[in-house]
Length: 192
Image (tube, rainbow, N blue to C red; front, side):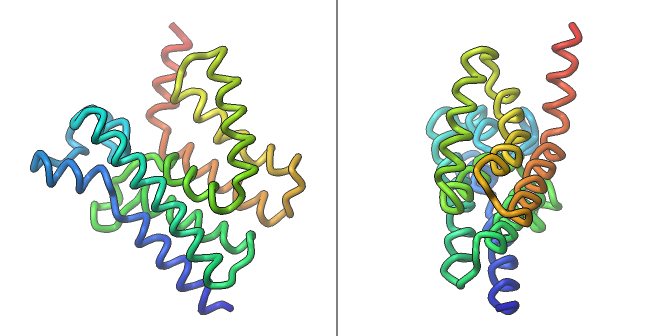
C-alpha cells in the first residue's frame, strides 16, 4: 500500500510538472511564456500570447493533468483520503515544476481536473457557488479564489472525513499562496 502511495504521489508531481502552456508557447512562438503577462504558465497567460486556441488547449491540458493524477491514484487502489495526496502533488507539480526552476502556474485548472475525478459532486457544488458569486461580483479571478477558499467548508457540509477536509484545506492554501500576486492586486483595487 505504501509503495502504491509513493508511486501515486511521485507520478502525480511529475504529471503536474508537464506545463502545457509553457511547452505550447515554446513550440509555437519559441519564447518562454513566463516572460509575458502575469509570468505564469496557465491558460490565461498562454491565451494572452496565443489567443483563444492557446487558452483552450492549455486549460484542457492542465485539467487533464489533475484528472489523470487522481485517476492513477484510484487505479493503484488508494482511497479518497490518500488520493487527495496525489491531488496535492499534481497541483504542486503544476505550480512548482522542477524543470522550470519551480516557476509554474496557479493550479486552479489542475485542481478542477483533480476534483472532477476525486468527487464530481463536490466540484459541481463549487461550480454552482462560482456561478452565484460571479453573478454579483463579475470578477473571474476574485470569484475563483473565493470558491477555492470555500472548498474545505463545503466538504465539511458534504460529510467528508477529517483527513480529506484537511487535504482540501491544504489545496486551498497552496493555490492561495500561488495566487498571492493576484490577491494583492485585488486588495489594491478594492482600496481604490
